[in-house]
Image (cartoon, rainbow, N blue to C red):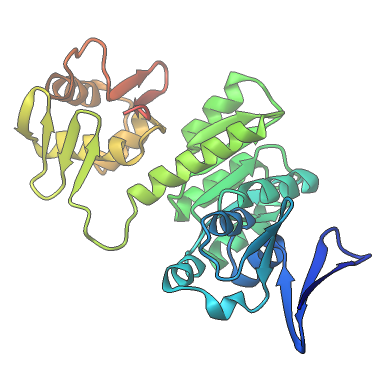
Amino acid sequence: MLALAIIRMPDYNYTDMICRKDLGVMEYMSCPEAAKKWGISERRVQVLCRENRILGVSKLGYMWLIPKDAENRLTGEQNKERSYTMNKVLIIDDDKELCALIKRSVLSEDIEADFCNTGKEGLQKLKEKEYQLVILDVMMPGMDGFETLEEIRKENSLPILMFTSKNDSASKVRGLRAGADDYLTKPFDMDELIARIISLIRRYTRFNQTDGMTQQLEFDGLKIDLENRSIITENGTFELPPKEFDLLLYCAKHQGKILTKQQIYEEVWGEEYVYDDSNIMAIISRLRKKLEVNPGNPKYIQTIKGIGYRFSKEV
């Protein structure tokens, strides 16, 4: 005969379930416990339960009951889930409560987060661990966000999302010129923040694969052949001159990010920018004739007035 005991634990906000059959005892754990035990997100555990991919799982009301020995009974596919490596972000902000809130929120998207409260701490963490994104506040005591950003950019090209309480264009332009990839003004909607985080990480990992297999970048109506340094567009196939290809690839690899004329010039020409825009403008004009159906209304390389250019994040 099978008996079910429900034990309320005073120090926990979940119900511990124990199933007894004669002399045998089967203990169950909750989704948060399983997530912590297996090193995956609670949301991922819930998906595995719903898809019946954990042996012995059952449901009582709204609560999933997962056998505590399920770790030794996972199928090969589930073991693969456990070996999944989550993306990691670093939050640098002196608002500790906000850091903790963001950390909890991104975990639901299988994203781990570390946080620290000063720029110096953040720079040290970047030396110790690998991250796919930095979330950086502008207003911090000591080393502010702009100074921290400049130091990060000396060593690292990972995407940086900045936010601040200042709702003025000057701070935004300064951050973008210094190398920020995106900008969000406080107070912000958490869903919007998470959407931007996911988008930035997706673009970063897309262009930083380590398997060496990526030979072609594909966008809507555009293919960039890295090996042959050519492009395929609605206008045809073109082998690009070196500077045209280098400029296009640099913009595409930073899709959605506003690049200043100085950044483009120093990357493509490899020399100090002398505030002469004619070379950049001439190459972009030639590129647009090959890339665009309507060069006067560019789909790919867009002009950001007063700053530079951006490869559209919509393609």
